[in-house]
Length: 111
Image (cartoon, rainbow, N blue to C red; front, side):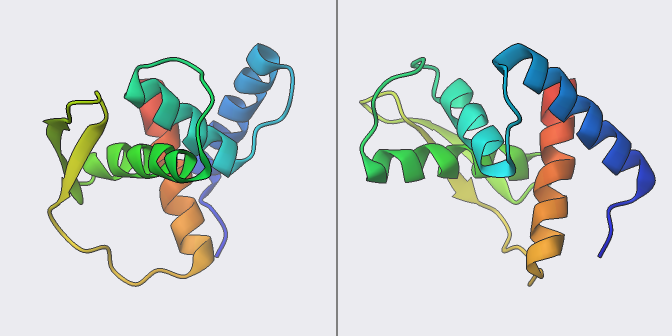
């Protein structure tokens, strides 16, 4: 499945902008990690492997909340955000998952 032309254009524009800012090309996982760090609000720091997965989860929940799949519940005592699943995602092929994430990331950076 190929991305529609507008999404592809916006995605490539975003990647070029971020490459200038960070000095390297960022892959989808790196963007998710960056968004998770931003949403965590604690700045860059050392994370355990499990915490890194939690940071990615924060990003995915934040991004999918714009599609009403998740809803922000609040922060725990350690300051980590928590989300409630509102609706189960439909079954998606890997390319469809990537496109959904790319679309959500483009929208996230527009805001």
